[in-house]
Length: 91
Image (cartoon, rainbow, N blue to C red; front, side):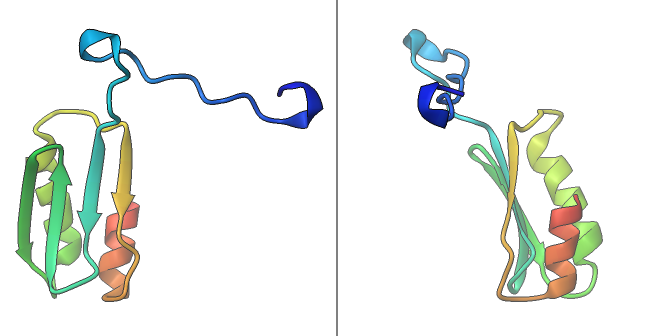
């Protein structure tokens, strides 16, 4: 905390090329609409939605990550299938 009760700014991200901060690596998951999808950096994968979304999102996430570790995970929360949204958030 800083004087006056304000929070200190977050620590900068580790340096990227040329000493600039690097961008966070985010795994994005979408199970809310007609297609189930996962994306990580420039890599994406999708499958038909509907039954089996919970199993499909795990397979798609593994495919796009290819062993990498994301800094954060983002998931859509709707509108759409509540079961699919829960599957993405649980992953």
